[in-house]
Length: 305
Image 1 (cartoon, rainbow, N blue to C red):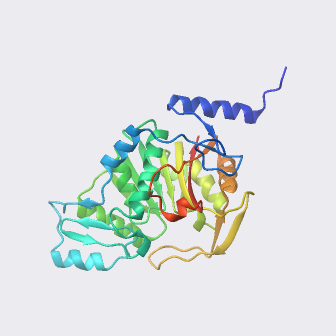
Image 2 (cartoon, one colour):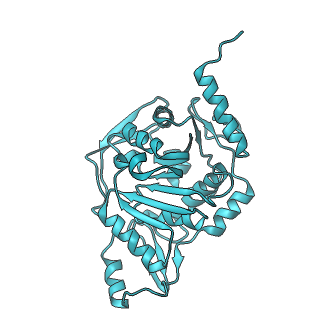
Image 3 (cartoon, rainbow, N blue to C red):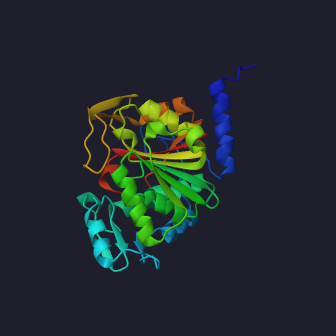
């Protein structure tokens, strides 16, 4: 009689979770996959319903909140005081991104959204309706807003930069958005005791900035109830490696002294070590993809508890 291993039990348990979500697992390296590490599997391409639902909920354009107390002059002063990583339109006022690759309401960030959010909705059972969402390293709240628009019951964005949190609160005030809160906290500050657990956790553009990535992912797993979506720059190496580089961001962001950019194998191993039962790569199925996704130097992964 063959012996049932712990790894095999975890694998079968994760597959049962996936089937309950209406998903089947495909080997990376097989048809329709991202190719690469044999340690990773990939989600199937999101169905038309998930894509349509994501497209319908997206927005970076908002009318001014009817009860907004800021004068036009104060509104302009506040807009000019921030660094804008993401573009927005508030009423008739278009605010272009200061970060050149991110410019345009339907440019890079929208293409990222169409890559990430249909997969997220599929993995979450088709919708974020009724879900609690945590957005770690939320910057100015762009992805927190998208999660709320996609139906999340409540969203908490945490960010180590006080300037980014101030900007995020400013945006939700100007746009009159509710159900979203923000807190100054780092990826290492997360804990079940302090923050509780969240059904869905977003971890976008953060992992490759951390100098303690394993600790960051352990904290992530502690506050994740169902799944986390991790979007990160990666290095092209088939082994479980991290490249150590100086961390460099604009002055409104919090910067670590060092950053550790992982390989895709390292991402999978670290997420499993942190406590995720199964890790799946998000397939590259949308067009156009931003160049770093298309070239395979940036990927997204779903970690299932």
